[in-house]
Length: 598
Image 1 (cartoon, rainbow, N blue to C red):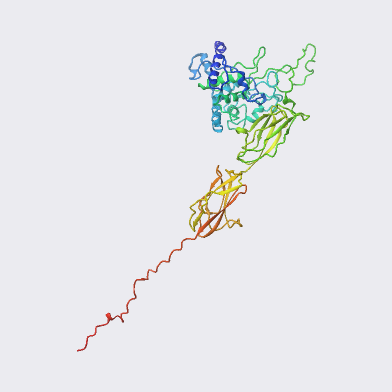
Image 2: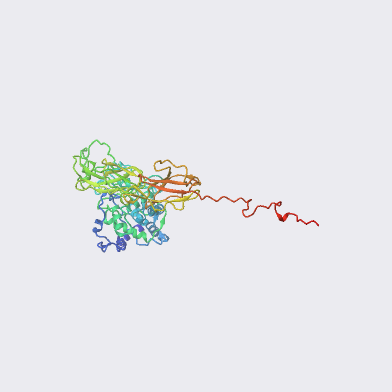
């Protein structure tokens, strides 16, 4: 009890100074015009510098959060060596549960690979996790990272909170009337629908799993090409999570605290935060993971959003002694509430070549039942299907507010390398209004022209190999056509495209003759150098035909010269220098000498 009172006194007397120091440290390098007062609070102008965000398009729907600030003691080295209850409690407050800490660090590693330009620090995830759920309520998670009990924020019914009607039919939050923030990172269902990730590799995207939720939060904070090493982008990212300057300052305080170092504590031993942003006199706040307080007229014990059981008397008409029930104050309709349907606003054919930007942009119009335009409505465009196409920054979701004519124009789509059809779904953010699907097609890369690099005619002697390789360049619209499929084939003639059965050839992996090559492609500069060509013993002029996807064709003449004719070998038995043997019968030198007779 004494430790508890001491903690409360310490927090009340000193944490303001901690916040001031932490925020001031992070603000020192921020852009001119951002001011920090003597309490460490940034001016409200800082919040307005964030992108236009709405409750139904933030991660949490601007749900309540914990306002507890970091302790005074340094997080590193670990204060766990302190003796006594106070030391143990401070260690638990300063530390991060093992599984939760592992999830943050794993998410950072994944984002370092997937989006290296974001520079996401795991300490930012830890700061948001602390503020949103007290590190999954002190690390009360199973071995795979799933919270032991669901963590739910209050229902967003417009009564002291944002108004976000049900978007998931209660699938995540069990509420079929209004949305509630879910899980250790407090995602509302409409945001989790597109931001959810599978962080632990079990094939599911579960907002109640700290690995999934941490990775989703990382991707959410890294959208819009934000670089979180830049103070301006860091502030924008945090404010997009919950659009409150007080929230920003609280997260920054914990971020600075964790950057100084922290330590791992066992799962389930972390302390629970105590103070929440929705605390107000006379009202008991509903902490994440608890059942929200009953609204006037609701029945105790009923899950929020469930239909009340029929009763004999309607509220206000009960029997004698039953006080009338005052209904909650009505909330004036928002522009989103007046949307009856969406219409295509004249979008043309959505087709682009792989790796190229779509020339046409998707346009959607929000209308009332009478067909009148509805301005200031957020339209969410979601890429659906097996594709690597994306909006700016590599995102599969973009949210745009309708203009005065009720039209929202999606950002330009960038085609990936995967060809085929997919869809982009336009829907009203925060409303279950039937969306508009748009069919999108990505075609293969093509070239419309093909030229040879170099002008030296390929020549070879029969039975030899061509010394000069054949190099070509593909272009499309005058620009280099990279990654275009190419086929090279030895044909019989310009008029006969059949494969030749003699003359030059390529070699396969086993060294066998091959006269048609497929599976080739140009490099990023549109160039391709063909493999070495060889010649059989047939001399003559031959034709190599190179074609690309898209129909560009180039014929290259190949010349095979006859092998040199060797001189006949001389007859070794013949001696051209030797004279004929003399006839001994005619050689006077061989005749016997004649001696005259006596």
